[in-house]
Image 1 (spheres, rainbow over the protein chains, first blue to last red):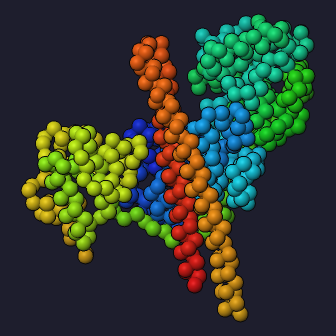
Image 2 (cartoon, rainbow over the protein chains, first blue to last red):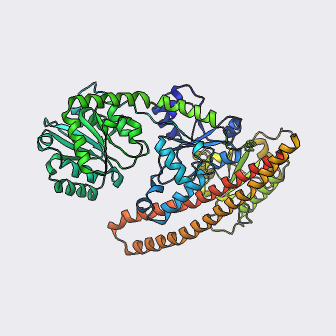
Length: 475
Length: 103
């Protein structure tokens, strides 16, 4: 989606927390605008018509901070990308343990506070509206695209598959699968056993999926049960380039899933000029948009008939190829980017919000306990708070020494929470209150500032204000 | 005419307020339930982890990693619960601000 927005020249800024994130994004989307999260940045962008796009709300498990607190505080409208609601739709499979169950409920509650959802397919949009109780008229379909690495082979593909598949003259029928039951691998293997023997003799079914030994052994049993043990290859995990090469050598790709949010492998196969057939449920008919390519995924005979025809009927194969090419032209990241921009412009925020750019905030890190340095730090914090123009002050408390903490305020967090649970980006500055050289070195290594204290907390507080460059601000 | 439309707007806003407060109440109740459900699960996991550590089996190392991951996920989920409450309250604040603005 980001690459699509970048391609169409949309004013998009990608926010990152670490250098590694920045490097990965820059490599994936050369020229993309990147900035580190900070209160200053949110202050700058807390302006009318600016949206926050959450790309992680639908990941499983849901990560921390799909909508960072600072965005909520600023009152920016939020739209989230909606991939699917599979855990919500199949609780017996995905909500067996208490934690996933709680996560699914939280996701629904969080979603209902958002302004818009950007769904990858109409099926995903419809099911999300039902499962998440989100207004359907605030969900837009933005589609998806295919990575440019998926294209017809320009260099021989077989050598790139060394180690996972060798060319034995038989045609490859490719299924990209996974351990989830909805991928329908069991029925696919059973259906392969129903394909005409002369067709099977000229082909082999290749199932590409990273699964554990137990699942692979189960699949092997199912293949043997269908009388097709020697005709099926399970590749295990493959690299990105091997996945491309698999599509390039395949005579046919098949996606028999009983549920997908979109179905990217369909596009990936089509982009490699490989005929592809799909199940007639969930989002898959929407992606390919060709009824002649569809089959009933719950009926093994229907799957077998579709495979056989796609491998033997040349006229039908041409029709499948044409459908694939249309799909590749329709579903592009640039179209997705444009759909995002159009959707946000049409929808607007769900309700008027007074934007509240976050005020400047700093964190003091150190001991705030009965020890000598703890008492000095506490005195400094109190003196600093008393200054008329002091920014919002948070304490990051290092109590590893075990000494008794003094008092408690809502703006007080354990220092060890910094990073995962209290983000560095929440603060304009983090100042480590250390008096020795080792502490200052540690602070520098963590990209924090450090401050040595005198015995006069009032002058230290004024000094801190000056150090922050705020001493001359109007009172 | 203007005063009638203003009155209608205010009546609609006031009529919506109880539903929003009720929704918030429901969310808080659900939060309570989630946390009360998670805490014993976390406690159970810790107990089991302690047991395995005391048993001291090398083969159990992947299990330790699995337990640790579950603990982390439970902690993340609790934080997520707090964030949901914050967003709900923020929405309510905006609604109330809009009502005040509309007079």
